[in-house]
Amino acid sequence: MASAYLTQVLILTEPTPNPDALKFAPETPLTCGPTHAFERIAFDPAASPLARRLFALQGVARVFIAPDFVTVTRATDAPPWSRLRYEALEVIAEHVASGEPALVEAAHDVAPDPIHDQVEAEIRHVLAHYVKPGVSRDGGEVLFERFDHVTGVLWIRMQGACGGCPSSRQTLNTGVEAIVRRYVPEVVRVEEAASGEATRPPGPSRLRRWIEGFGGAGGGGRPVFTHGGREIPRGSAS
Image (cartoon, rainbow, N blue to C red; front, top):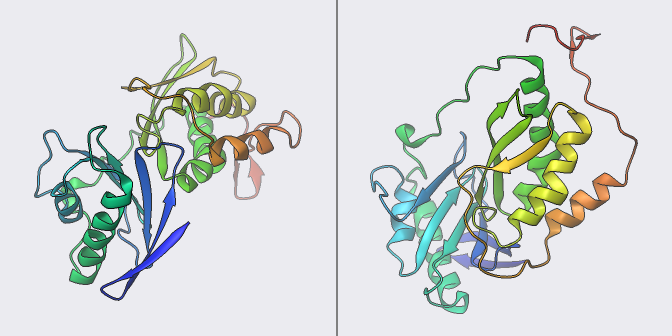
């Protein structure tokens, strides 16, 4: 982890398992709402002042904005991080000092669909409490996409450093799927929606080490949902 003071703003930078992505964490929160991912292609400059500034840099391919960090992903033909890192630091510091919002209201992610049943509620609970903390530490995000009750396939979206990461498939198969299936046996398989192809061999991942440690603790329990201090029986309406 490294830090830098630019225009009197402290910004911590951390590597991620994706060699083409860096995580930048300013001392000032960026948003108080949901996360949002932007691609250079078809980007609407009015959607995010921060992303607009970052996309002005040569080689920035994707920008992922979370409440307390921003992950910048470089294109394969972009300048090396030894140069692009400092350019991104300066842009983020200038944005924080400007007082502009990182996202405009219309750019916020659409609210998730209503929970239709208890199984979906359990899946969302497991993702939020057992998967997302580790993913966030690596500069990424995992979002519920849909669950097929007939096939038992859960579809998720991986954003930030996880999107297009060379180790994302390995993390998905050996980590996320193992955790979700441990708590929600109705899930047979976990797949990534709109996943990109891996172009480099997997690198070391703090998220994978966290998942491996998690898998070694405790037995094969499942989350218990309560209301007013009483356990909600499985299969009841949510």
